[in-house]
Length: 217
Length: 219
Image (cartoon, rainbow over all chains, first blue to last red; front, top):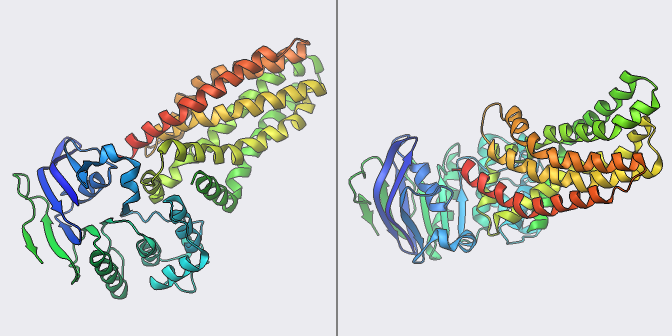
């Protein structure tokens, strides 16, 4: 259960949003939309704990994430709009290092499988600087394949992906949600996820208070 | 997990060997310019040797410090490191350890060799080696604070130097002092002990300060 309570975010002296409330039960999926500069990335970074909120708090399983600290990190997978891929390393090494750092050691074979699922089969041993922008994004998506975190926070996850990869993101999200996972996704394109419940959060209009503007199961 | 960070950074350094070698060559060249410029005046060379080697080590460490966090910051891996389930203190300590192994240790190992150009005796060379071995980790540790504070700023390189070089002064005094004492035939132990104290202090406090600076830089 992820809760956002009365959250306010100020960047560069400008209030991006205030009084934001959100409650996401297990198996639910929030799509954050809004114009450029409406604070989507700031909201996602605040949920991850990278950005301290001006006021209000983010709660994970009922506790403020600032008190949870590293315990919260074990239940979180964050995909920012920068991929977090080291150009000097191959996509296989990138994936194994990232998994190793988050405490879930994976074998070469497991990493290879995850990468072939993202469509990088045969390119595992290529340094990431030789990959195209979309392929790097796919290499970053492999983290979702191996992730066993409950909360996924994905920023502009569909940027520079082709149709096949968009389908992959959809099916990964469906699996994640049907396993009781939670996902917060900022994107302009519509995702076609059939599992779990869905909320849409439109930023830029919430200054006064209420949160989800549309919701269905 | 500490091991993963060190391995990762060593792997990255291996793939970018040119960066690493440039620091080492800078150190060797700067130190070697002095005997060439001054000429074969053994007495003078011997008395300036500790200061020259130590100042060159400080400047060489400036070259590599800018890279400690900047590359990770640019490609988004630093965010990921901040979100890993381990204290940021350990992450920082791991990155600093890797930076020291890659950029400072080669310089420590080669110092006795280039110290010969200054006509230093063998026991003085071993004190030079020992003082650098204890002093360079302090340079990496304190330097990481500056690297974290200047993340994402334009002209960060010059700013690091202005912020950090003054903080290096105790290391310079004790490090060069130990070598000086050995040249004069005195006991370098006092200086070495002080250097060890600075090392312990900075090992405890510097990663903590760096972590705080990183959090601010990534906001």
